Length: 220
Image (cartoon, rainbow, N blue to C red; front, top):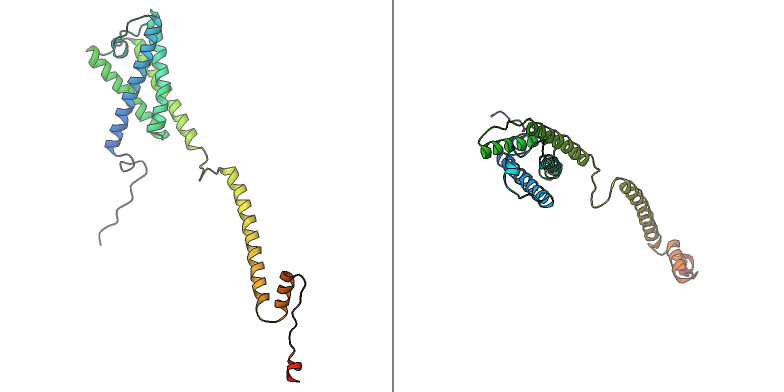
């Protein structure tokens, strides 16, 4: 007899296959860059500065001695806050949020290094990435746990209304039981030609009684 195989643990590769994980990472990365590009484009239009990809992928643009550098820092933090929405929609599990958030920022580090052909040497850029990763992680965990702790509703009926629904269901069940008992009683009373039939006829025909022939008179 072959040995029985144990059931896979929750959260293993059967729950999230590798291809599904890679697809979610790519979707998160694309959504992250699309959001950042849209916000940076809006910022440059308002500020009156020409837009370029250096503002998105270059670490030299993030400087503390220029106004556009501080604005870029605020834009990246806002992008991390918006990225929590994508984490909530695509990941939706609080214990997986740190992995996806850190992977997203690690891929951004690789993209920045490949674009500038050098490892970022700006401490402000590193501090911003650390703050952005921490902000996205903690806010994403809080959002996912808040969603997980919401009461489950079935058919649009919540927890409070379900108790009321149970009470009304009990009351309707009791009324149905009473009506069922009444139906059985009327059925039992209506059987035969005895007293029950007279009671049924009196309730339905307005106090009219049926004359029943006596056995003694029939014998005479």
